[in-house]
Amino acid sequence: MKKFSLLLGTLGGALAGYLLSNEKLRGELQKAKDPETAAKLLGKHLQADGAKMAKEAKKFVESDDVQKNLGKAKKYATQKLKEAKKGMETLVKKGEKEAQKAMKKGAKAAKEVIKGS
Image 1 (tube, rainbow, N blue to C red):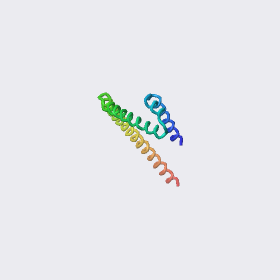
Image 2: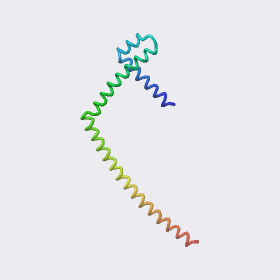
Image 3: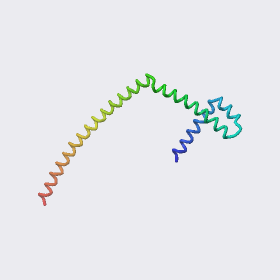
Image 4: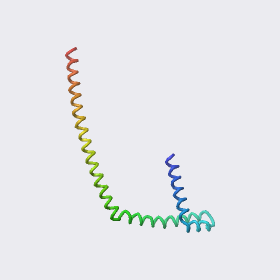
């Protein structure tokens, strides 16, 4: 339930910021005769501004700088994955050796218990 209220609060804050920053929308909303008209005006503005934002976001993602940095990030992630894999292999080998030692000790102890019986 906390996530839902957080989501609603975030959306409300975003909408309030949008209303405060869009002077044209505020003027049109003041002239709206009923809530239905106001909702249609708000939807129209959100749709138009959303399309503009989507174009800008697409342009940004396709820019050379972002693509170059994505390549760097991919290379970095691949390197870190290789390092993690090597680290895990080392830990597994160490664990195998420790397990073998423990098995030998356990087998020796079991033989002594059997002899002592």
